[in-house]
Image (cartoon, rainbow, N blue to C red; front, top):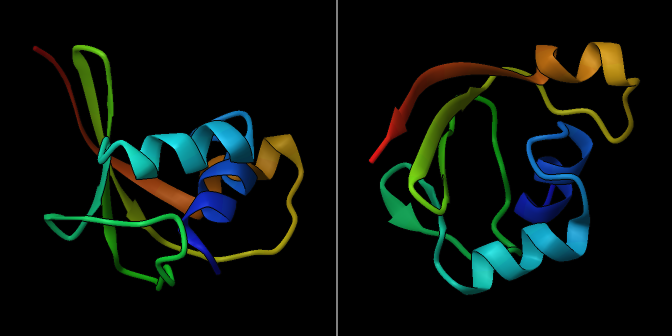
Length: 84
């Protein structure tokens, strides 16, 4: 699954276009490397997203094409959250 779609389906970012813009401006990294929106997300990947001064790192547990809002948090595990 594409990185921008994963971020949208998992509800880490609300809209796919916003996720795509975040990837283009290098605010999203996978396994320590800046990733493009077309990156193929795999189970076990560590995704770091920077929102202004806040940074969130999650580990991908599951990949689904669609999900309900209540089940979205089961797709990832939060490893760390920091405020810079």
